[in-house]
Length: 625
Image (cartoon, rainbow, N blue to C red; front, side, top):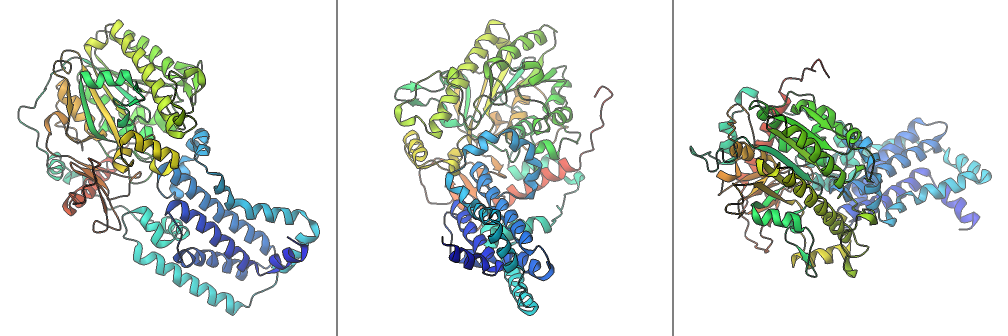
């Protein structure tokens, strides 16, 4: 670029230059999030930028260029955050995600693994501008040119037109359920502003009106008078193992004749296996899974459950088992402060937690000790607990197979086929193969110590590991090879559930067909152990006694208003009418099964859960805390 050309470029009115820059960056964001930009991008994104720039023109008499640069940097940061967050969660980031800053810092390797090099194009103008600003003469000329005043009448007119266009984009689209559709209808920058200023207060249902009968009616569930498997495992220990990023397609998967998860396969094939089981997590990921599985409530509408609900006196599985003389403990190799788990564990009523301080930093992978260390030290502690004469409940959170799944070579337990090497899917499969190896060691250890035979062991995946929106072309081809068809949303959120109890589940192993979700774990294990839940409001249902129907509302990873029913995954649009139907069988059946009645009932269930938990009394700290 010649000196004359560059001078002409930057002597152009800053309001024009920076508006063009915002438009180009918006096109990049739209390409990633919505598939492709359109001519409407101009009318949805530029008016917001013009409002900001008009305010600068109106009020800034000095250092106008500094304000332009600052505004450009802020909008650039917003659009870049939208790109990165979408690649990880598949949703549009908002200011509410600022609560996650500490967590994002801790998982920075996961975040950066999602970044395609061309995302950095959003910063190229900043680099070019920095170059010119470092050249003193050019910087002085640019600053001088930027101080030229635009007539106030022109600024006022432009501001008025831009404001009207922003309102035209925002107001008619406020009722859209699907957050991604809403952001596309409004424009990304308008949507971000809308989330800040809307301040919509939630209309809670009075707690006195929330009854188990009402919940069961919405779910069309009726507990039988004589439930199957009632007290089948009475008096046994309860061990819940939460497997990091473990999706259902791994079960019995062979690649070139080699089993990927032989130990989990053995458990699934020789006990009770629920193959139509689905995640219910949101912004809190793993910690949300811990919350749901221990409470049978849904996640909050915004934020992680550990941050929103940890201050409440939560009815929970640890408190339920304590009523029946059980001890309780939870095990995780990361620091307890991560995702505010320390406060969550107090709210749930665990007697003890074991974190990084207990497991140490030997054989560290990602954020803490490896799964081998987790299981080895946990087995020793469970052995000690079993000597007390009291049954126990322990929840164990595995972590080594964590995104981005690049485990160290010393942990490799398999050779990948050449076509999988260097791919995201290949890294995921290798990490899960190692996690399964460590799980096998743990099971053998529990059996050797005599703990296995006297326990109910529940295993499930905490959340998806392979988001559709994070896969490149090679990864999608590999997933198509695995499934024999395109990888879809129903596959993405499908996780396995296995329940194993010696003398109960191994008598007649069974693969159950009924639909289930993480919210169903509490009532299901309560039935096995013989614990009545009459005084515990819950939104799940006993899977052993609900063979015909289930309704699972979804949040965050899927748009608000989405749900899984016994035949379909329904993704909401602006509402029900323009939603999308995905058959759970993945067979491409076109005839919609999910109904508007189910859509309304799913929303009502979420509202009841939000209302109930939000109105629970605040937790009173105990003296020893």
